Length: 202
Image 1 (tube, helix red, strand yellow):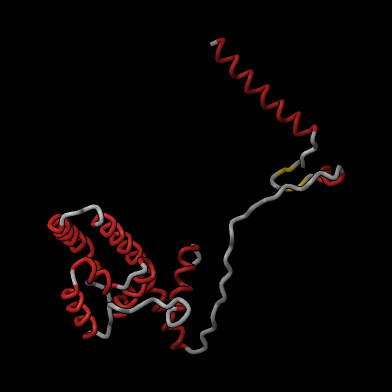
Image 2 (spheres, rainbow, N blue to C red):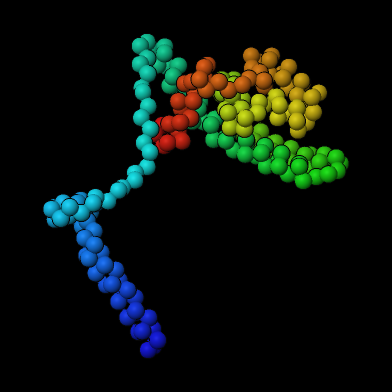
């Protein structure tokens, strides 16, 4: 008990010593982040406050009802698809990193078969409900998040024959696994949504 009192006394003395030191050097006095006028009179330097960066985005004008409906549809699709694009890209990166740990092709093949089944069981019931436009958006966003097109992912993990098959299948529905994300061109509007989503302003 006596030892605890000594420790508490030391802490109290330490706090008061710091207060005295602060008064000696006339540090600015603040109350709820407002500068006390006395610190200005005493020519005390102002403290610096660092606030988080705030991004300000332009709000493009959409003059026609058709443009507004198209944009509203894009926003709805984006909010539904983007979390999957991020998650699947992380899964791919995890698989790619793990494959580098195997020196035996047979082990790699077994690992890929297990992971493929897990992924299909987890994502197929959800992704098969996507519309065509949502599927196109997913392919683009996966390229943005992983830096690799969907075709390259399939080609790397399952082989060129499988990649060609799925690419042909995708083209039948007006899609392409080889689509690359163009943040400053065709996908500028999607990039705008990505930034707002990550800022929590969408």
